[in-house]
Length: 378
Ligand code: ADP
Ligand code: GN1
Ligand code: MG
Image (tube, rainbow, N blue to C red; front, side, top):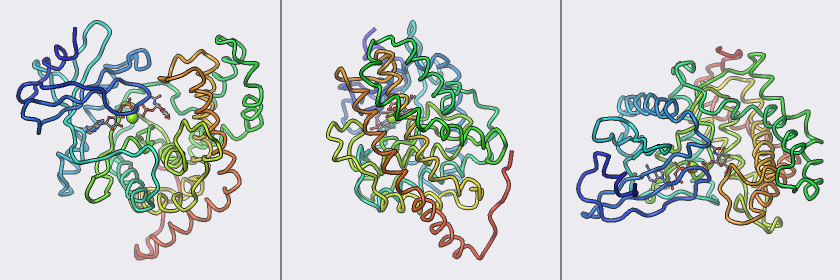
């Protein structure tokens, strides 16, 4: 079945002109569908069903969350057509189309936006932080247990570490000898990896409905205003910790280079961008953040960057079976950028904590001195 045949299974307006590969995601196959009137476009995606084995549960999550979001944005006087992801139903009125083992879906294409792979503007990054903070705040009342866990233990850093140890032992790719330094880098930090998982388990921080893949190319920025208007890539929305959401934007946005930059001298952690994101995120989430979460934001950034590096290294050891790769050592190159960032963040962790506190205090001053919640909610 061709992509054209698949696209015709959905309720598209008009006649299809072209279908072309689009975006730089590591997981799904994304296409831009342009109609003959050329002003109407859609995003067609083939889900990676090897990774998202429970694609039906995943699509149900997305249906639930997009419906709630659309209502909230409408209530708040926003523009649903630009600020919310909107699924286009199939001819039978379903949210997705299954062909043998492939699962396809179509979204409304949000026009006049850009996504960044590297951000250098503090204003744009502050707007990005505000959008992700607001996203979590909007989902605050959402019952976490009504969503399925799309990928079990997705951000369970301890479990990621155990899988990494297994990958070393199995050495499926035969590359283990080559990455002894990288393996030592991770092992030296093993005690840090459980901090968020433990805090969740002890109910020191709340389990929330979170996005879980908040890298900067998962938010659409309005071309003319620079505002972050629409959060995309909703596949991994499920119960999780805000710290991973905050952290993943920092991991991707405060990197002065690309995630797969080969020249490590270009990779640095931009603390000014960190401050900009903190300001935006804390404004967006408002009073929904707890004191403990605030005090752990910097750890969220460090731990997820380490986790992401571990995942790239694990995939390298497994023979590149998870992330899309373009060349032989691609996952190793990605792992190196993440570990370099970890080191840079570690050397600035105290400053990162102070920045979070300062941003919160500046905001609290403007909030008529209302107090933060001091305990977790769940
Ligand atoms: P992946 O899971 O593979 O990362 P994404 O859902 O993030 O896939 O989509 C890949 C890219 O497609 C995004 O980075 C963005 O550039 C673009 N994109 C996705 N959805 C939309 C949309 N509704 N409107 C405009 N662009 C989109
Ligand atoms: C993947 O789908 P994409 O490219 O937005 C991955 C994230 C990683 C990221 C690293 C479902 O995100 O968890 O942090 O690559 N998504 C999944 O770039 O594994
Ligand atoms: Mg994406």
